[in-house]
Amino acid sequence: MSGREERFVGYRLARLRVPDLDGAPLEVHPAPPGERTGRFPFDAPVHVLTAYDPGAARLPAAENARRHRALVSELPAHVRRWASETGAVDGSHTEHGVLVEGLTDDEAVALGARYGQDAVFRWSAAAWSVLPCDGGPSSDAGWRISG
Image 1 (cartoon, one colour):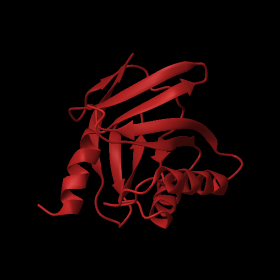
Image 2 (spheres, rainbow, N blue to C red; image 1 turned 60 degrees about the vertical axis):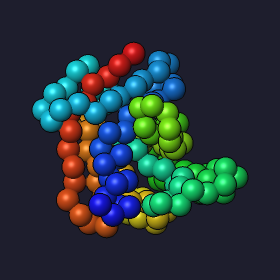
Image 3 (cartoon, rainbow, N blue to C red; image 1 turned 30 degrees about the vertical axis):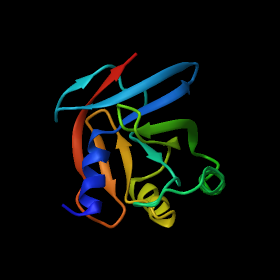
C-alpha cells in the first residue's frame, strides 16, 4: 500500500471536532455507510478544510499556523466558518482547520489542492465523505454525532 493509500485509510476513519458550533461543542464520527445518528445541523452540505501538514509532510507549528491563517483569509465573505479539529479518534494525529458552510464541492477541493492537501471532508445529511483533491473518486461513510 502506498503512503497516499495509507493516508486515505486514516482519512476515512477521521473524526471531526468543532469546539463551538453556535454555542455548543460538536463531535462527528464516521459510521457504516447509510447510518446516520443525530441531527444534521445545517441546511446544506458543509466542508472541512485545513492547510496543516500537506500530504505526508509534518510542518513546524508556526508554519502550519501561518498556512491556516492564509487559508482562512481566502474564504469568501459569505462563507460561515467555525474552528475545527479533524484527526484520528485515538488522538495520534490531529489537524486544526475550519468547518465552512457556503462552498461548493469544487470550491472546497480547489482550496484544499491549493494548500497541497490530499483531500477535504464534506459532511451532509446523507454522508461523511472524503473528497480527493486530485480528482479521484470520493469515499462516503455514514456518521454519528457523539456528545
